[in-house]
Image (cartoon, rainbow, N blue to C red; front, side):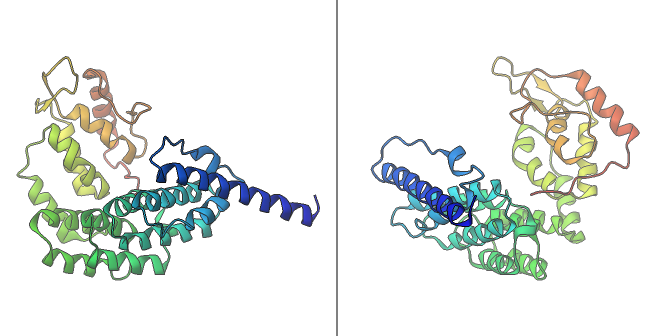
Length: 300
């Protein structure tokens, strides 16, 4: 294919992507039924054009349009093979955190957690530090992103923020600092855990934060709870409210974070069926033989 023909094809493809996005955004603007066509926009030949086309809507007057534009750019960048595209979209998402609409900012933190921290440039880290200091919405979520991404100043910024934020937000700062290997924060979390009685609420609300830390002492505490048969959790089954060991739910939550762990989640990422004594036995046998288990420190 000649260079001229190749450029023509690329331009035609970009125009098609732009027209398709215009059509969808028009439907959204008029509150009509929309098919978002993510497969089309993330196709290998369309990803870059999608990012460019989405950028035209970042300043739209409607929050839902702005939100969808950033969503398109994010999914396209994640599917693309371009590191520079990913870095650019991470910066765009961080800029969107200054938006006046909470739904736009909510979309931003949800999408930002999907990008590997290597795609956060120094400029992105500076913007993230600014958001942690002055963000209007979902500050706890940006504390956690800050702990995941890190920066030269992140520990001091989070500690300063902790001194100023409400008590209910201090947990998230401590968890973020744990991810940055701040030992005093690890000890703070462990002290709080010593006063917690595991339950289904613990599994749903606190366990994800504890797993996020990737800290060995905290994981050891979680595993200790997984080794007991004390029935502190209620079954999720809609036809049964019997008490079962929290170990059953803990082992499926921890599965993604320990290398070689013998238990797998269901395809939907959960395990809500009947209590499995065989899975509990397999987990405990494996842990007994793998006291020096390795925590997987990849991803958010």
